[in-house]
Amino acid sequence: MRVLYVTYGGGHVAMILPVMAALRAQASDIKQDLMALTIGRAKAEAAGEAPFGYAEMLDLVDSEQALRWGRTLAPTSGNPSISERENHAYHGINYLDLIEEFGEAGAADHYARKGRGGFAPRAFFRRVIAHLKPDLVVTTNSPRSEVAALSAATDLGVPNLALVDLFDRQPEPFMTRPHKPDAVCVIANTVAERLISGGQPPDTIHNTGNPAFDTLFDPATREAADDFLKQKGWQGLRPILFAGVSEHRAPNGEAQKIPLEAEALLRAHVDANPDLALILRYHPSDWHLFPTGHAHPRIHVSPPPDEPLHPLLWAASAVLVQNSTVGLEAAMIGKPSISLEYSHHPKATFSLAELGVTRPCHDPQTLCATIDEALNARGTDQMTAYRGDGRAAERVAALIRMTVS
Image (cartoon, rainbow, N blue to C red; front, top):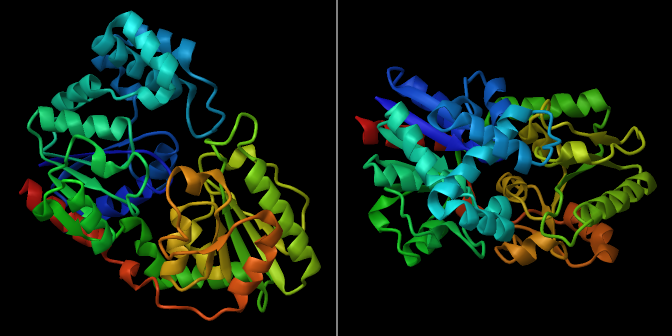
């Protein structure tokens, strides 16, 4: 039996990798293929997997034309973990798919209006699936390639499963997509209820939890957090973890304005309060775009490729996000979380504060005061609906095994 996974980087590949390990432990005879895109490839390789990307599938298309279009269309990725060839293959193959669907003039118009957001390479993924012949296709809930993989699997009669990582409250959410996966794994019953309201059949939804969160509950993670604090000499301090990200929905030239402004406020607050420390953790996709800033004995700049997140969450006394699963992960282990509700992300997607996950900060002037309130407040039980037990990957793997056997 064979399973094909298609996933992007960040928190998405982090959902898939524990499932692969759990399935390998449960049924080592099941072949697992991993198409890990963008920064997901480096993460998968670091975990000991053998992922592939668009570049390895060039033989399934007119490779010369694909690379020609890719060299024309692809911006410089800037991310050292994404090769130039993969960058070109991704853009070129996706554009060839647009030409196949709309013709050359239609593809040019479609791309001019939507850019990469208009990519949906269904024809390409029909070729990938026909080539690899999986018995099951598994994705997370990312757009573009993952939607195309699910749709192509349905076209070819191949069972498919999607892992939904958060609340599904985006303006263009997973639940409104025309394709309904054969099975969906969710983090909580509240998400299941929303999917049902969007037309997903109830008997296809499984409340497994999020496999990416499993290591939060591993005792080794707590030990790593203690080691981190000892190495930094921060015992007795109250570290603040800022999980920042570029704001791609911000006006031109302002993608880094809000996170850098927050960082400056945090640095000044830590400098003025000797009992505080700061962990700066920018998103794995764009951390390299942010300056490291001046060195400070109570400020640590975390490099995502080399340093796992979960020990840092346990080491922190409070966590600040713009709008990220990191805020949920922190709240799941009882860490007070604050979200920058004035950033572009909550306005364009959903508000963690409105969901009861974080304390809201509505303007930069109140940021430090909001953090102090969170640091001095007692924990609450408001996150019980999203509590985990560290066994989500086992449950998803068991579902996969049941599906393919």
